[in-house]
Image (tube, rainbow, N blue to C red):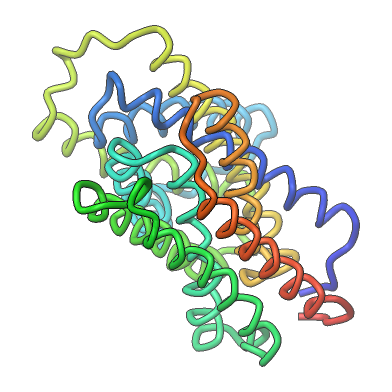
Length: 295
């Protein structure tokens, strides 16, 4: 893993912007789509352009080769499960809150990377930065206007969804030599296979009458926030490592709050702003600790 360069930081910010904007789109999509169907349609929209990209570049898709198992497992843990959990959570909490709760990813990602990789060990200052960011998340749970007895379960479900991203990230590192487009497309195709029967059995999607707004939001989620974002994420993972990549979870809430406030007219309290400040401090400490370190 190499020291982060300007292009790496730019891609990290771009990924944060894309994923930060995904939460208000998820919120809009939940107005018409139930969780399994939302996740299913999202990955279908993502898989089509990814499949066409592989065909255009003459890239072999290994989703159903004799080495299919890791692609299937990553498709389940890195896409199908977190997409569904986050859709469930976002349906009952503010979109920016869902984005902020994603900041738990660096902590779980760093712990997993410490035990399951050779070059992503936890350092003292890295731990301080990660824990400060997580304290900012904990502080949100004291704001009863945002998280209360009616929706705290949905907040925890969202955190669980973010944890699966870290698990999937560790798994993805094992396929870093299999090609960006191939891995992204193969795992996305497997997520369709997992989600299709769940959607049909639990939600009967054929009776839906979705709004244009919800469908356009899903289209964005599929093509941009899943297809394009996953290509960027895989590149960051393989070049810079999972700990660097999980720092995007500190950028997501910044963009998420901006989108939630300006586009969704969601309530922003003083506790939310303090929490966001604490998270930004965590970003600074982690980023400063990573300077000059070759992972």
